[in-house]
Image (cartoon, rainbow, N blue to C red):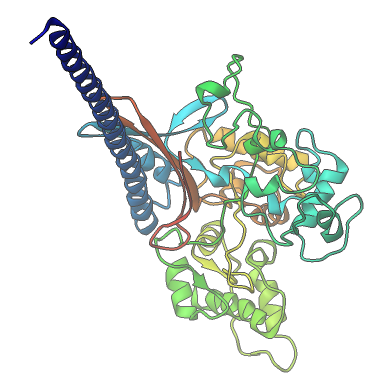
Length: 439
C-alpha cells in the first residue's frame, strides 16, 4: 500500500473514532441529564409525599379532637396539631408552620383568628390600610345580592366596561385571590409582602426589616365556616326540631327549661325570627310568658327558672337553631376569641371600642388558658353586660372549624422542597379539604 493510501486510511479511522467518541459523549451526556432528571423527579416525589404525610397527620388529629374534644380545654386541638407539625420519613421530612405576629410558629394557621371579610361593614373595611370609600363600597357591592350600586361602589355595568369583562359574584367572596377582582383592589393591598399567599415569609419576600407585612391578609379571611360539631363531639342539636328530653340531657337544663327552649326555637318554623342570641339576651321566664299568653298557650305549664351561666354555656356549645343558610351552605365563620390578635377585634362590626378593651383585658387575665365558653367572659369582667354578650355572640366563638395547613416536604439528599397548602374544614366529618395548592 502506498504512503498516500495509508495516510488516507488513517484519516478515515481517526474520523470514525472522532465521530464515535462524539456520539458516545452525546449519549453519555443525554444519559446523565436523564438520570439527573430522574433523580430530581424522585426527589420531588419524596418531598411531595412527605408534605402529603404532614397534611394527613394533621387531618387525623383534627378529626380525633372533633369527635373526642375536651370542652374545658378549647386550645387542645391547636397543641395536638402542633405535636404532628414535624415528621421524618426514609429520605424525606416535612414541617408545618405559619407566621403570627412576625414569628414563625409550628402548626396550621387558624382561619378563625381573622374576621371573615363578608361579615364586615363598609365602615369596618375603611379601617384597613389603603382602603378608600369607593373600594370599600365596591367590596360590599361585590358580595351583596343585588345590582344596585351603593354610594361609590361598583356593580355589573362597571365590570362589563373593563377590557376583559366579568361579573361580580353577588355572594360572599370565596378566597382572597377573588378579592383582587374587585374594582379598586390592588394585589399589594391584599398580599403585602406575602406575594404567593402562603402565609410564610419566603427568602425572596424578605425586605430585610425583620417584619412580615401581610396587609389585609393579616386581618381578613374568606375561609372560615360556622356551625360544625358540638363541644361534646356530637352533631349539634337543631332546637327547632329537637326533643325536649334530649335537650335536657345534653345541656343539663330541667324539663321545664327544655320545654321553653324548644318551644321558643320552634317558632322559626312558623316564620318567627329566632336565634341562639335570644337565650343570652332574653330570660326564659320572658320566653315562657310570651309562649303562654293568649288562647294558644299552655296555661297549666310550670314556669321555669332562668338559665344559669353553666347551662347557657352548654346550650350555646351543643345546640343551634339554623345551622345552614337557605341554599344549604354553612354560615360564615366567626372570630375565635382565643386565637385572634387584639388588632382583629377592632374590625368587629358594631362593637363599641370600650367593649373590645374590656374583652381584651378579660382574655389577658386568663393567660394561655383561653375561654371554654363565651359566658365565661361575664365572670371575668363587669364591664360587659348580658346584652353586649349577645352582640358578641354574633361575631365571636371559642372554637374553630377551618385551619390552613401549609406543609413543606423536603428531600433529604437534594434539599428539593414541595409545599402543599390545604384548607381543612372540620365542620363536617370526614374532614373536608376545601382548597389545595401545590408549589
